[in-house]
Image (cartoon, rainbow, N blue to C red; front, top):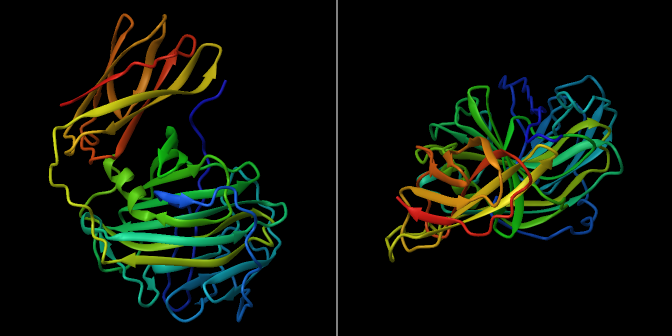
Length: 384
């Protein structure tokens, strides 16, 4: 029997002798145009710097990007080569079990990481006024080992970056090798965001909200990774506040066993101030649609995700979804909605934190039910 739960945290820990910083979780995040299952990228650009010290940090081609070696969970050796906005794991002698913390989390950084900042980043930016932020990445997968490749986007309650971020960690997992999974609870399966599907995980840890978007189907490279779209999804779920600030975007690897050969051949982040957030001016009546998708199944029951999409001309302030099960299915548990059932008739109403849905955006809730997997095609969504 499968359950929508997993217990595996991955954490970046960085100690800088000059500044005394203890690091973060490297995960990743958002609405993107993906280069689906691309072949491995070209060899990383010729490196100009090699980092072998556990806490080494250096510019990655000028001062607009930083590179971290970041060996924090083990005493094994690791060296990374750093070039112009590129990083390659050249040596990694790690051998950590996949059900614990990783040995190291080498990464490239645009913006700020626990008080250490790159130049000319265009960050921080307030969530409510976030312009278009996109990222391109061309990567190369290593041979064997246990690792993941991911983005991490950090949110802080203030624009001043004076220590660990206290808002949220938003992560986007692009690929993984070996039996590693995000920590927390999977709250939505195969969520459609900008042309790809993502399993969504959430937990509260270290005083911050931690959300992970784990891609369904690995990719090595992405183009036009839309940070703003993923931020908007997490904000709609109540995990990121509009008054918070996005302070940094990272891309790299969490390494449990081995990991040599993994590389970021090209990495860039663009903050486009010429493309501010779209106007929320009402263009027409409120309307919504809903679709139920069955996820995990077992002999006694199933999980399901219901996606609500704002199909109208103005933001939703609340929503209500009704449907009828075809058989004796019963809802046992739900999250991100209040679900009631009378006979075969089911009604779901938004939670107090996710009723607002912008035009053309989507929100979801999940449930666990008993009985055979239902084939439900007719759902009614009504704005509240």
